[in-house]
Length: 436
Image (cartoon, rainbow, N blue to C red):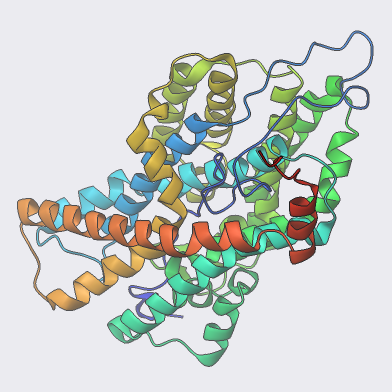
């Protein structure tokens, strides 16, 4: 398969993240906000002699705010792609330098987003909802905005660079099944970024079965489970090279690398489930006081160093392993900062607001990048003009994301996250104010 078949459509893109304030794509099971609460006594971590569980924050604005710079990094990565359907820069060396500087954003943000999903869903899990109740809450939060984003992409940019989607690709991407197919054009068909929601949908299907197992892990053994999952993730590149055929298809933005390798290590849902499980385990360790915190500054510095490492190691190691532990450490440090009341730059009101709309931003920004390029025709631009155009694209994406969040994501979640029977029961349980 030639690289021309991928032009402007199939590119790696980090996924959305969990919203610790119940306003993002994978927020908590409670539509009104992230609610944590102390872990129950007994069971894992409840035995005599266990480390005392820390006081846990019911809301995690730092983790919401952290989503803002991560979403910006995703935007810059996609804007840097050298495809005709995206590229704005006229100067070849500047365009290449821009791309190379952000080439491993997926290797940083993917572990962050998927681990953050697992972390928040464990942190916020309360009560004992049935799997159908839990899945209902996930569905109404994610699927309606996803469908709106899918329709927007299908209408505005279908056929960009001549890469028309097939009916099969339309079907698979609409129903969030595209990540299961070992074909990169299918993975990134219609709305380029939708593949990550396809992968996360698998996590959500598995969560109700995995959570009881997690709760039974003794607190003292969590470190071994965490270490085992980290080793399993490190084994993914080795398994890929040993088992997966190299094939002839290549990664569109990295034509020296096998598309088969890329699909199995980076997209295939069971392989990415390990990142999600790691986030679940780390959340449990933090909740039970079994996590050594390096702090936001220390973890952030380590993450920056790991990104440089990712740029200088073989591709699969960069996209799967290099930034893994630092990303998880940042997540844990953010939750602990909120629980302990220590200062955090990411509680800034604007960052938290942007974190709230970041799922919607993720769903629309790639479409805006492509549609802008289509409107501008074949003309390329100077560096200052490109910076201005990127700022405009970012602003339009942000406004559209706010509209999608305010008009679809938030009202649909509030209205339909609980069944009619549950809403009626809640209303009947509310005492009637006494008449004066």
